[in-house]
Image (tube, rainbow, N blue to C red; front, side, top):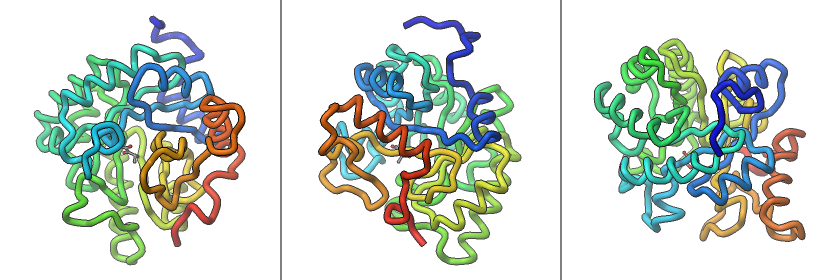
Length: 270
Ligand code: KIV
């Protein structure tokens, strides 16, 4: 559906910032194709993340590392052609942001397909890339905490329980925002640390396994639909037992994020 950039019903970065200011929670989900993008957006999801998790849930890889820029651009195009209202954020795949110049080229490839925000993984090591993208007018989300692209170095472990790691993450969040990041995303971070980062940040903070205090929540769609082979502790299957089908399951997720009932303590880490 073609839309004008001035359509006030469209979710923009300033709409997300306004939601943070009025403490309205932001609902985000991964989407990889046009059909689901339409269902999710119509169910009230504000941000569609074309995540490199597609390497695992669509392509069957063990990690996100084999995902190419071409694959990310292809799926970004599939999602953006079905866009109704939600903002579209796409992951920069492994090493596509290794230098400022590569990051510019990679972000351009995703934005040409309809991405409105690009997400990069990493703390202060990514400052130069974030600054370069921001200076060229490209919105960036900085992903901190558990970094799936660094799995071979850091594992799939909760990050920030150690006080030194926690204070580095706090500082990284501040530096990344200062470099121009428009959004932060925290994955598998103790709830109390995520709460401190969210309170200190002026930009919206989206969490996954990071407790209920974040400004918004994201899940991998396949976890929400209960079709992942192994359900992470921070996810919930909203489909099983929901007689309304997929659209109703997504709508229940959106409601639960908005009313603060998801994530519960059982989905969070200390
Ligand atoms: O790729 C992805 O789906 C993600 C989420 C886990 C946040 O980055």
